[in-house]
Length: 359
Image (cartoon, rainbow, N blue to C red; front, top):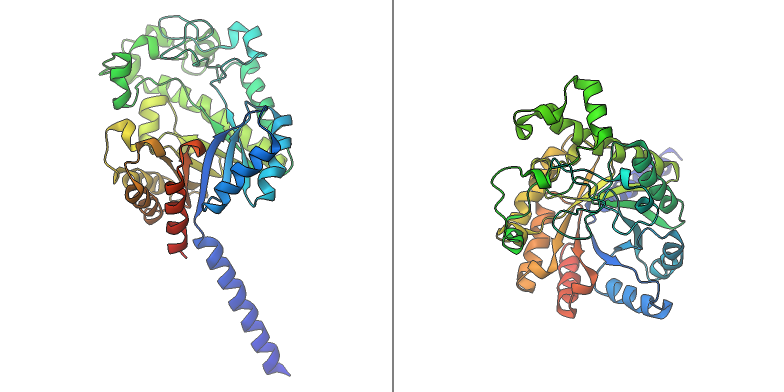
């Protein structure tokens, strides 16, 4: 009787190992999409079915931080076999009715102008301070309300950073800007709370710095302010048995330089770097390069990389396939497309075929 038991044991080990291997080598496909409360359940079902039939596995849904709308949509997506992530605009809170009652919550530029009424670049840039107790608690409350929704995989943070101190190079002509140095109107946050907190640690005022762009303590203070919000959000998400994910800039050193975001130091389950090559006047192979940079920086961490691909920047379906394969070859666990509405029937056929080729 010992031999059959041994064979059974070996078979069980083999099946377990095969299952783990399949799980570890699975490559997922997602889309970012924005919800509309006026949209019917039937229309949502049609949209989600289209994604699923086109090889999509998950949807990251922006409900304007409305948990009720999210509760309505989640069953419609899961019924079609899609996983759902609750996408939230975190530190940038345009039109936030609660925050707008508190002008002091908003980030202040080096020029002394507040995002409350002087918005950098675009009118929807209304950034809350990550240091001030009340503003950060407001954001974390919103995270918790989404985390409570049954059926979601994660709370997905977006705009979890400071305003762009440097824009992507291809966007500069749009604003008639040259950004060879850090410009004071785009340098945040110099509010009273940030100055006070920094002085308590470093015993100096950044406003008195000869050159704040090379003041590493001041830069790290802001990187750490964002990290602190993320780390608290991680605890909240996991308290409700959800994961924490985030849309981030292409790779850590670049994110650090452009938007005060050092995501390789965060407590987070998965990051979705927005490797939008056309924004940076790069070729399609940059998708692989930037993915590898992030994967390398996360080498000793549990955090996974999911490569974000900008569909309007893709020239054709051959290039779309190339981008997907380069992300996978360089260590990503999946790719996510911005956004669902931009995906053509041809794109979805290419995604489905590429997905099938990976099995």
